[in-house]
Length: 110
Image (tube, rainbow, N blue to C red; front, side, top):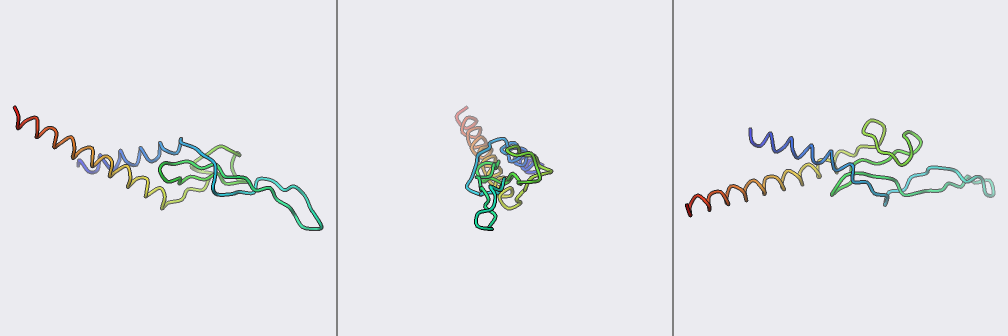
């Protein structure tokens, strides 16, 4: 039961990390400048992305509101999301183990 609670907490932390937004390095085409010698010229810009430590939510140009992330309209990449959940789960398991050792050390001295 304890591991289910820690997994749920890790998922919540990974979802909350999507509020840590940054731009790049992925590029997206948000506009067309026009034609030069009959060739369409586009202006790529760094995409907005969210998630930490690995970004997993990317702004989808032409579909969603530009420079605004949303789970149902933007590009959700599952492997980086799983990596973030794993990172937070390991962090929580380490904190739990350290807390358990600290409680045992205090109980041993007492």
